[in-house]
Image (tube, rainbow, N blue to C red; front, side, top):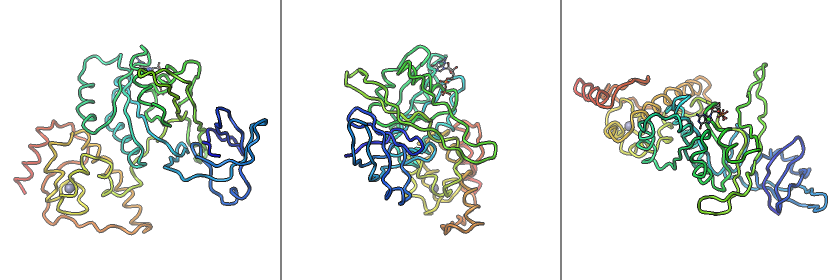
Length: 345
Ligand code: GDP
Ligand code: ZN
């Protein structure tokens, strides 16, 4: 019998099985294999006792994916929640979450909350302009005024969903609007103790009752009550792997002259040739993440743990000079600089 782990408490594992919660133990042999069971894991049950609502886990079924913070398996999607105001929309942070989800190969959807605070449509237009062509499903909500909540519920659907988003954007408020009385605590909990060691984050699948959605489909919302992805830096991948996380950059990379082109200043870079098709703020995030990933490259170099991919420096110096630092330049100045540098070269 197959069931999904909803909650883990010391040696007890809780699964939803036939509309009831069963308390399970793990068969000794499985314990010896030292395979850690995660919330979200599908497991095979034996010794099911329908009166006492107990069972024994005999096998962990193969995982589709897993996250480490929070520790959860088989996540079906990440919904990134940002606020339009208070705090102001942070595009780099949004791109960071998008890339992290991409790294974990988990489908991503976007929710922009505090829509009641938006003074004009400029931010909303910008959001559509950047993220719609990239194929993201987008909803706008106001937890305060209870607007867009049905869209939000539809966005989540019946998929096991992890939320991501900075503190204060309204994650808890939105979920509480979906399910009043649940008093969800999606608040970030301190991940490090005073002694600097990591603490285990509590993590549990929460089902939000049956709802009638706009399509009047019966819908059980399954969410993880802890936000996914802490605000990590991209210091765990190599600089030439960052482009894999940006679809619109990845699209052009196969035409770059050099296989390990970083699309910053290289000769014959197809990404730079098509820079007009790439949103400037997305490209700036790309540059920031490449910068962060250089730390990893240095670490690998000094520790020599991973064989380095050879980086052929383009012999022809600077073709286009784009500072890796964030520059508040308009697209046209940006382009002018590229052409200026091109001419100088
Ligand atoms: P979380 O840290 O992401 O869980 O954010 P909270 O749900 O705790 O919300 C942070 C603050 O923003 C609280 O003071 C909320 O009342 C407020 N807030 C949440 N949603 C909205 C909204 O849609 N509009 C406005 N104006 N304020 C909101
Ligand atoms: Zn390139």
